[in-house]
Image (tube, rainbow, N blue to C red; front, side, top):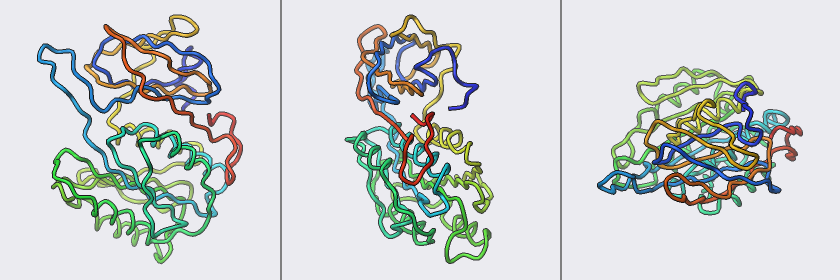
Length: 307
């Protein structure tokens, strides 16, 4: 998280809120966890008279993840932590696939049922090879292979790389490759969205947001900021302004939202806080607490703030 976004809540640096209440009380207690997300509901009953049920659109996400040798160091740490964060913000109904460039023919499905186990496996990733074009084909092919008729389902292709792509001589070839699949119609009739994140010396890609192609450029220390924006974009979350967050006591935080929302995600940065309970008019379920940590990765650089 950016330093300027930290407020007086020592264990709540950022809150992203989506719950059908105007006021929340969170009770938190210190544990051995390093960073915690909580209450990420995909379905809830609204508090209107009709008792309608609202659901979050299903997201199918296919990530091309650069784990080449040039990523070793700070870049590896920031990118790994960012992928952990994206994973933890998704709903259990979503689908996440990651094609590591070290294994370009395999789009690995990341379990969103046991997210803690998935986050741990992402953290322990250490392979380091090349950046083959095949990995992009694999990721696109995975999205194309998933059939469905629900027109609200969203398909996302995310490409994260820090350099040139093998088999391509310049960035115009990569642009042509990505342009060939932008606005691609999926099985349910919706169009594919594409997020390209170029890190460090990576080739630049021209955005075409009208056709669902978004391009981002990030230096090492800005990867987290960009990935946070991507996670919000894909998950559909908004961020609650710090002026709407007050710390009641050492274990309790109050959150106010003017919007009718349906689930709550709490990011406790540089802390071992854990969400124990949440309530508005009634008690709310705490679905999960997830610990993220990238302080000591095998191919990364030790960053004490990456927890």
